Length: 164
Image (cartoon, rainbow, N blue to C red; front, side, top):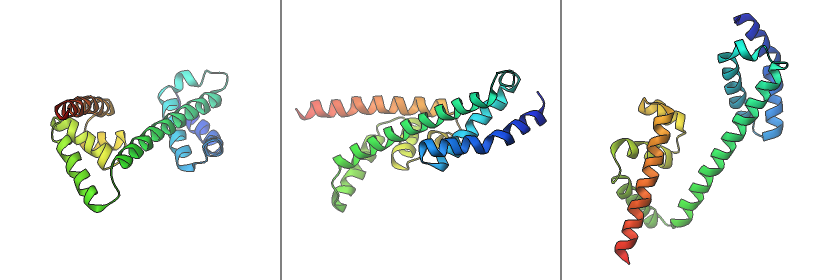
């Protein structure tokens, strides 16, 4: 792989990919992020990608897929937020009760799950930000979040049974 060859490819295609994604997504920031990720993947596989009939088309497809994944993730996050906000009242007293409830739930989790869940749901951090903060892999963060959600489902179901 020649770095110069990849650099020329990058410079020749970067702006067009960003423009394409900005138009399709309506969000330049997401377009830039997805483009960057696509070119990182292309660079990692440049020995193979450069042999394709159209390496530029490959990068565009990857960028679109990354952008779509980010959009879906954002939609899921917003849905979770709407659910949480719908369950909580808008008054300050209810906010305090809601914070206490969230704290009580989080305290029932093991430390790493609690940290990941608090950073994700309370501090609104991305998986990559959480991985950086906790100095762990994104896979570990995703695993901790999944385990935390499962544990909280069980805790809430058990609490509901106790009330009935």
